[in-house]
Image (cartoon, rainbow, N blue to C red; front, side, top):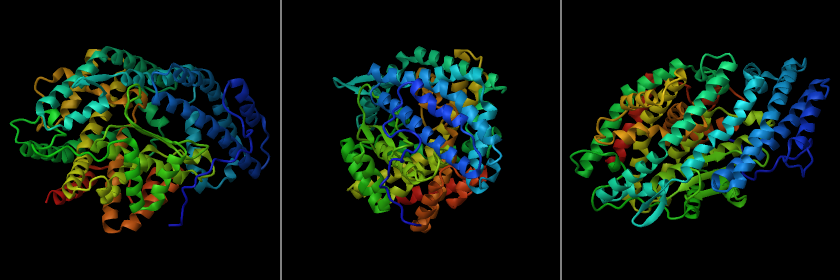
Length: 575
């Protein structure tokens, strides 16, 4: 693997002035106009036009990303929310018709056929897909959706509970679910769920509006439902809804039995008559919860040290982000929930956002988002912004494989050998237990958009039915029916990024496949990983998997093989 550097550089501007910033549409429009009106008279002329268009896309995309980042970091700051809303309602809708016109100009150019297919195939395929989906009447609806989707973070960001006389965000309060005091765990579990119930109607109404608008977009574009539209928009060229259904069934057949074993072992270890949801993160009496770090800064330092041992380039990426102030790690009131890595197209180094509260799961989140960050660094040198738009099914391999690779170096978080064993066991259990939730959320989304006119009661009924299909029979949910009815409302993807969830399941399989390689030959596996991620979105999904030494396969047989491997690794940690 040739040497790569994390010394990321802001793209030099050749088309826009160096000091240009996105403020109003009047200032921005002339650049779109120039591209649209510029004659293209040769292949080099087309390549220069594509480069200028890419520069404009990078500047606009980075501006929009910063507006969203700032708003999620502080949901209580009205000015930040207004800046984001202004972009969604006043700038983005005016860009879209130009985007469509520029796409049409590209595909109709006689010189487009001269572009090398190995480099441009996936990009041009995506452009043609965008032309097929574009409808003028969808522009205002899409603008409204951009704003409405962010309301989920605003509502959730305000949720806090009081424990032992102190106020905590829900993320911070979840730390108490690891406490040895079972009564306290139950109390906090109920408080968190009761707090969510306070906003259940607000969340229902928001979701109903989102579903209605999404369905309208699909109808306007000539689709029967939003699911079919979204599959096309997401560029799911390499698998269909039928393969998603097959995935759901495979999870029931080959994963759920392993989940039941994990939870029955947990019940036996805790010496309980029945395992309740507030027991899942607990340890037996006398064993303290894992505390891998205390502050976001400490988490970052330890992760840099972990990445350094694995491959120095990975650590350099995080160091560069720290220098550029591209991290907001600690949980606090008024911050949106969840975690993400946001690529920044022009300056290159991405932004990691998360809600760390000193838990084991925060280590997983940090290395996960760190994997995404490495992907952003590796794809940044590609020529065009569009080449860096890689499919989510490979993006999540980048993050989930990093979780598994990094386990060999987790002694930086866990000095005590017993704690280290527990942490690895926790991670491997999570690798298995995530699948039923992925299948639940994905199957629920299929139902939602196949039945867009459903009532709240029908939604709840469908959710509970699907939830029970994938629920472990080792957990006792008796008396918690009301909480379970609204469990879907804690999944931000349903609100903010519809149909983005099956990717986690597909990618987890890819990550396990890479980890299998890593167990045999660490350097070869890391080289395959970096080779694939360096390609960005310039190859098809199966080709990106092949570059990583993987098969793009989520058939039941393949899932069974990989699950047996993880179960074997988990058993060896327990020995």
